[in-house]
Image 1 (spheres, helix red, strand yellow):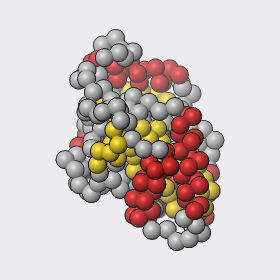
Image 2 (cartoon, helix red, strand yellow):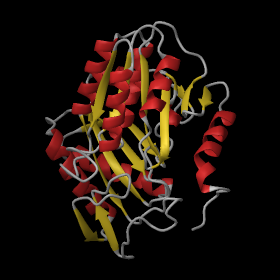
Image 3 (cartoon, helix red, strand yellow):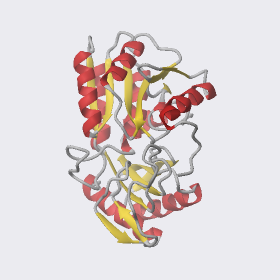
Image 4 (cartoon, helix red, strand yellow):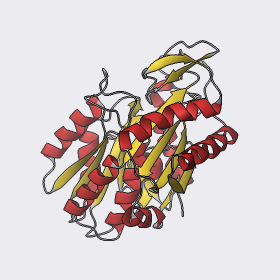
Length: 327
């Protein structure tokens, strides 16, 4: 295993310290328990908190800042954060308007966030993200997994909260964005969890995993490698079959890298996906391309489609200032 690491057990702490050192105007970090929070808390605003296992950077800590999250709780690599982290983060950033937890649908995350919700005094609510159309059930989830669509929820709800939306309004908006979003990915290689020191799964040089999860979980099938046109068509067939958009519908298209795929290839995927969406009579009018929900150094990518209306488009366009997103 070749990674930039001093001590595997200290890797997360050193990484978070570096994140905050690089963005001191935006972020602060606390340890014991661990969470990353906005440097300045806005009074009277709904506090948005998310989190999950590390290894998916910039999700979630990279999305803490103005117009998105107020705090993020990182666990060890691919391991859920603990309820005491979530509780401490909530108490640090709650400012009188309640707390909204944004949770990916993985068993550990949902259980621990629920425990934190029950222990937290005051008003709170949860948005459960389950945008992955690759599987309905797995050993890691109850129902569909939460993957790159989590970013769409965090961005749009973050914009609404920044504009003064109530807790009930933020909760309802998050559920609507989740219902309008679908994702699916494909992997060319596995990744290596530092504590394990070896790839999570074995895959042949001419094979791909269709519908892979962001922790390396298997998807729909193992297949022979194929041209980009065919890969995109496979992913979009599942995504559009789930969303069933009417012709002429405006879309947000997110091409997400898993950490080991060059931007050159991700932009190629965006070109192919945009063309195929238009052939379906759809209009991709907003885009995001890059490594945003990663799986360490896994080579591969996912496509996420969100059905846009005027409200969603306006929230997507709203100003944001985080370590990973700024406009």
